[in-house]
Length: 163
Image (cartoon, rainbow, N blue to C red; front, top):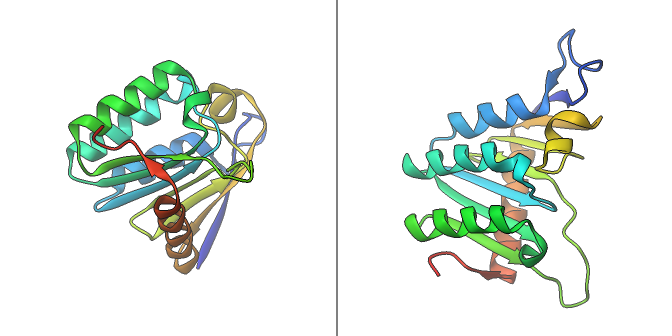
């Protein structure tokens, strides 16, 4: 297993510490078979990442996104997700809603069950650029385990893929 610290906030980057957003971009671009995502908040600042996910889907990469309370997310983001999901049967968006009212507060992106970014950053302008956030790039068995958790949550909740 390999672990690397990631951050946002220019004062924190450097000396071997990389930014969260460039690493997310890297693992999405390098994914060859599947991408799993758990996310609490998507804002228009995430449109760049959604475009990368669309390009991954165009390459044939399966994408599964489990999103907390999809109806409460930004309407532009939801519209883009719906458009991508309608175009690509292997792009699945899952609306996480727990009957007990619990929130999905995780922020995780896993590529090919081998590399994962886990951290505090939402997929928003603040989370990717302006806030001070900390995350980890994890390689190895824990990335596979994170994908298994996302698979489980996907099966427990409703999807609007291809609707």
